[in-house]
Length: 164
Image 1 (cartoon, rainbow, N blue to C red):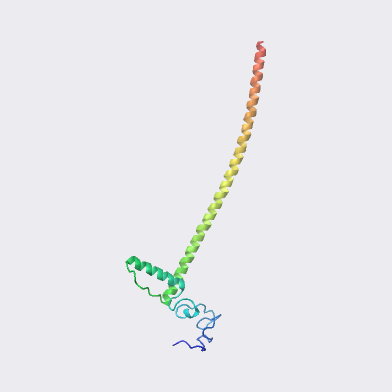
Image 2: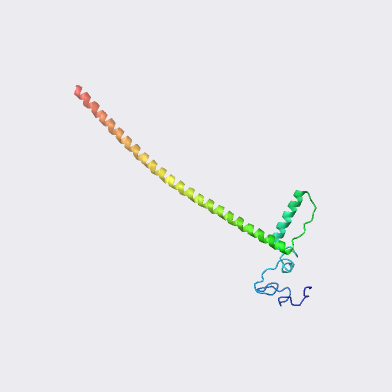
């Protein structure tokens, strides 16, 4: 079950080391990226490490747990292919859920900011309208005050001329 030597053809019928292209590592169309023991030959991490993100996550998680429990120098075994793929899928799922949640929060924040800005614009236009009305009423009060003083002056003149 050894790997073919240099110049020999692999399971897919292609030269070893040649890019997989449309064919996967096992020779069927749409095979895609191979993780695990064959993935390292394609340049995707170490043998048996699985997806690089899952391997790093596993290493950090286990190292943190070991330190919390008091094991300082313990070595961490890499995950097997199936566990790495499962952990990678779980991480991807959590990242998607986190991303969608973050996007929802951002969109809600943007909506609230837009509503607040719209309400502030409405309030400022209402305030400007009220200030204009107050200014107009102030002018009307001054006009009426001037007219009242004129009527009082005329009334005083009439009453003084009647007494003479």
